[in-house]
Image (cartoon, rainbow over all chains, first blue to last red; front, side, top):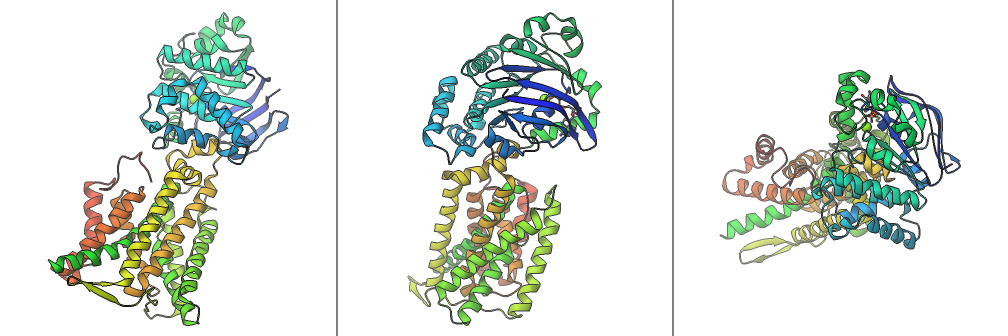
Length: 268
Length: 289
Ligand SMILES: Nc1ncnc2c1ncn2[C@@H]1O[C@H](COP(=O)(O)OP(=O)(O)O)[C@@H](O)[C@H]1O
Ligand SMILES: [Mg+2]
């Protein structure tokens, strides 16, 4: 087991968002976590990567109990988090973004850094001719590729991604998910959080469905994709839920809190 | 014509001092959003430490090094004691806290060094005249050293991993944490940089402009205005802002009235804040440092 989450509770101040999440991802497994806007997917990833303190619960990473680790220490231990909205470093070049991705490995062997970089370049060859360009000038799809490549530079054991498909044209979504599939085939453990269930189901080994801070369904994608509860209830707007799921968020969140979330994640 | 050249030269060397103080503001503000009102006191303290070290028999260079190192240390301690413990730092809170530190440092300097203004021994005393323009060696030293230090700081942010990690914190603090950069270490490093450049400004300026326990106030204000000209987020903007301010001040003093000299900074500040809050030398909000 590469990643094991048990009974995880977390939230923002007095607002409890996650109510006892269990999630496991075995080595070389790609687990998709789907759910409507506001279900708590990003909160789960923030708690996993130490950005948000846990109220209770445990997190294990590659056999180590990493509960309570901060993000720096977790990155060093082997968890890379590709955040919502990409958050590339805009005025830094693509090459520098990659170098910073390997920040925790700066004292490690240069050969390993080079290998990580070569792998990332092979995965996203579009980045190669743009290495000297400022990351802020890349297209949305390229920024997403850069954010993933930056995560890979940390030489992680587990890569978690927050809505890599959001705002991208279908062709690019396909490109990115096939890259994720390739990483899984190379033995990396991945957890992908998505509203875009169709893209996620196509590559996932297992799927967890989240609703209002709980995992409500779990199983293999083939079985779940025909489950009426997935199509109807939990994704809002149906199975092809890359459509706007904003209406659902209103049910799960107070408006004031929701705008606070926007500010926090979009802070530059 | 000679007059103009004379004023321009004097303005540039004065402006180079402002530029260094301004870099200190930028270094800290970009990383943590803190506006450090004690930045001027870093310069004054360094001047006073160097003067008293020379007074007690230390060679000039050793005194200068001692002053820079001790002020850098003061800056680092200030960060740990005053900035680091604050959970949710906002610019307003930072103004209140650093104003407190500034006041404390002033009181301390008054207590230890007394109320008199003094000048440090110049690195090279005297001067010469070139085509009617009189040039003091210390002014050349100021230009040279401030130039080298500014370039070094620029190189640090553009070329080194530590410098890039500070820019990363400034641009995307969440992503910076996720790649394993510690924001608290970054903040500490930014204070170290600010303390060092502020101290260098203080020891360079002291032989010409004199130092007292309260000289940090004007120097800090002028450095702040210079930094604001670059939008508070650009080292290059801070340097250009410092030089521009220095030149405008000496031109005003020379052609209009010496009494108006200190008003220039405030006038510039108002114009910039009203017309271009992002600074005149600032590029877009993205292009930090
Ligand atoms: N920074 C924040 N502060 C306060 N509440 C937040 C914050 N971020 C998210 N929330 C709230 O937590 C809940 C889950 O949000 P989130 O994890 O972003 O959902 P998802 O990623 O599934 O769309 C929502 O009710 C949201 O309003
Ligand atoms: Mg989200």
